[in-house]
Amino acid sequence: MQDWSIPLSLSTAAFLAWVIWSVRPAIGWRRRRRVPRMALSEARARIESARDPRDRALALCEAADLRAKTIAGAASATGLYLRAMRSDPLSAEIVNRAAAGLASRPRTLESLLWRHLAIGPWPHPAREAVRASLGHLCRLYEGPLRHANRARALANARDALA
Image (cartoon, rainbow, N blue to C red; front, side, top):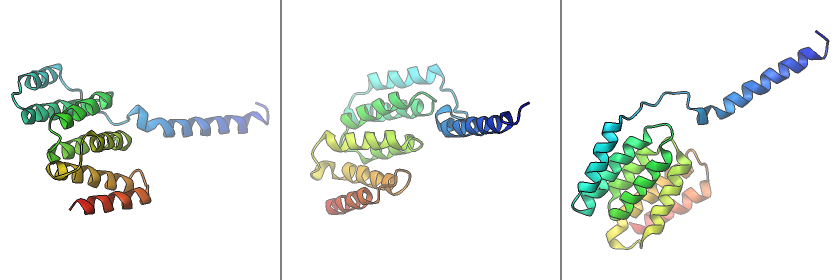
């Protein structure tokens, strides 16, 4: 080996270690359990057999919870949570379930909560659901997303709705 190849080999190894460390959240080192197809088909059947919007929203949340547990299920879980929020826009329980289901994906949760806030008006009937969305956004901006100004603004908006 030549003198210049040792530092080059060390720097290459360090760079590869850094790249692997940087992309580890996207790779998913921890194993997520696979959701059986039977459970997904049962959830779809419950969605289609729901009679009123509240039952439909809860069935959509159950299906979204199943999809959120899979590795590549963030997009479909987000769509199912959004459909549930549109089906029952007055329910704070659905917002809380969506926040719990997408807790490991803060950017996806942020986008979903902003969409929920844009769905409809904020007056009295939907006040609790809007307050729940504002509270979860505030926690996201105080925690993993780190936007102190946005967190304070959303906390003020949440408190103004009280």
